[in-house]
Length: 107
Image (tube, rainbow, N blue to C red; front, side, top):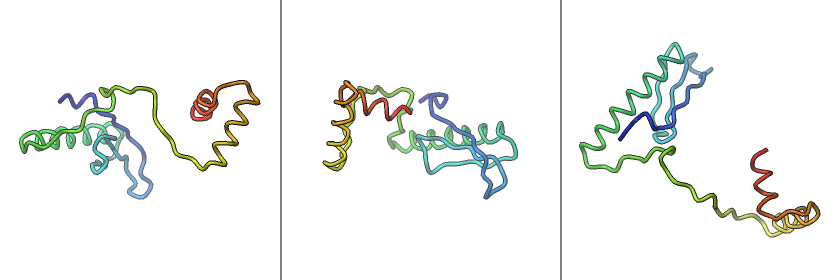
């Protein structure tokens, strides 16, 4: 497993007064450091260690989000009255419901 394909993020933690390194595929892991570079290096090292341990123990290792294939389709359940309101809005704009909702999700 190539740990370079995982989704990393570094943010400031006001609570800890340090930079926080995170990995989306391993939400329970984090690393605090004085600089963003150190936080990124730290979380990458923790993820690498975790992947090694999981593989050695025969556990399934999370697939990187970047390597997954997406169909572009997903279902969302909403209240019937909201569905009706969106259908009316789409009709008034002369677009499909899918196009309207997709546009709303990207704004």
